[in-house]
Length: 237
Ligand code: AP5
Ligand code: MG
Image 1 (cartoon, helix red, strand yellow):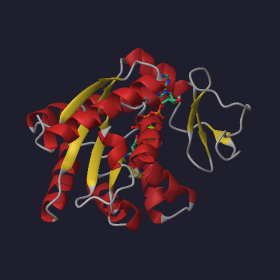
Image 2 (cartoon, rainbow, N blue to C red):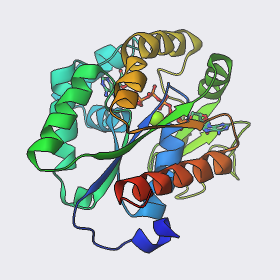
Image 3 (cartoon, protein in one colour):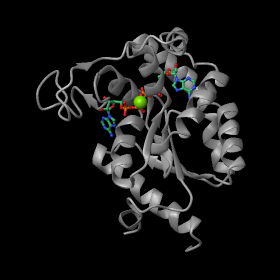
Image 4 (cartoon, rainbow, N blue to C red):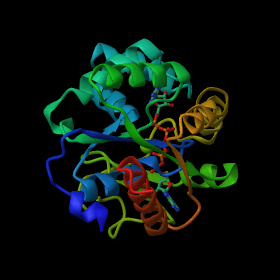
């Protein structure tokens, strides 16, 4: 299996995959699983902002003003933060990008930065989920304060209520997961991020995955998509 063969092998070029999808589509859930399997770093812009905020840095406090309203943090700040993160040693083999890019301007900045280093995105994996299902998922989500593992009160509950299965950390609900802010985030997604679907499709790197399957089924579909992208990229098809 191509994915297994590639696992943990130093590759010549870092591999970058983008997980694209609405709030609640399952980007964070799937990124955690994929990074473990593929041996790549997990780079999640939302997690980075929340981490800066937990340390009460200037960047975190600035981001909070936008996040609490369900709005996007300005492109220049976001792009700088993610590109700095991608330059860290654990990204040397590549990364799963979760929640970035989220605007055409961010996608162009990422494309330009990678092109400068002779690199490119292997595939953009678009996780498609209906609006009703997205709202159901966001309202039942719990996250580990310590390791960011994602749970759902009904769809993927922790073994012990309130505690993380992975590290025993305390679970909490994100402040932007209220119904009102979640709706606003969905509006922002449709106006500012959804155009990226066509943008990446035109570039021939978009692969759609049905995000309404169970969590393991979505994972299997994503791995299949990654393998098919590797075959095409490697000139086998
Ligand atoms: P961010 O943290 O990226 O949030 P988001 O895009 O709104 O996405 P979510 O994390 O809400 O959803 P997800 O797709 O990761 O779903 P999850 O796996 O958790 O961004 C937050 C804010 O930061 C933004 O609003 C913005 O202000 C700012 N920001 C971030 N990036 C930015 C950028 N690039 N530019 C500008 N601003 C930026 O799953 C959701 C729930 O569903 C969980 O409970 C999970 O257990 C459950 N679930 C997952 N998959 C399934 C399944 N298949 N079946 C049943 N349940 C499932
Ligand atoms: Mg997320």
